[in-house]
Amino acid sequence: MLEIEIVPALNDNYIYIVHNRTKLLTAVVDPGDPDPVINKLNEKNWKLNQIINTHHHNDHTDGNKKLLEIFNPELIAPIYDQNRIKDVNKFVSDNDFIEIVGVPAKVIFTPGHTLGHVCYYFDREKILFSGDTLFHLGCGRVFEGTMEQMKNSLKKIK
Image (cartoon, rainbow, N blue to C red; front, side, top):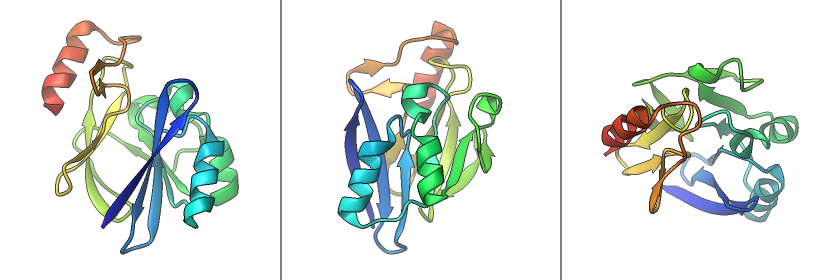
């Protein structure tokens, strides 16, 4: 049902494009660079319906503006970053349930890397978009939060 494309971007980032093959809906998670997203969407012949941000850092949001101009998707971001991310259609907070590409996802508040960081969890599919809270072999650096917050956030998503 869901197809996920992992798109390398910048020097050390990945952008995730999520496509619902049944409903023909597409979302991008943390588009730090719009160009590789546009290229992949064109290659797949997909229209972008949603932009999902986990936190306000530029390497996760710099593509928002151009993607909004081209595709006019819904932009979903953490309420905690309401003064830091522009043009948001829908703010989310801890324990909210939202639909991403027509599939229910739970919002998990995970401060530490930033004070407003959230993750998005698809329970049925067992998929977590963790932003900079959790990496393959570690976690993101603590910029705004505390080590205690990061530890608690990692326990929460465990």
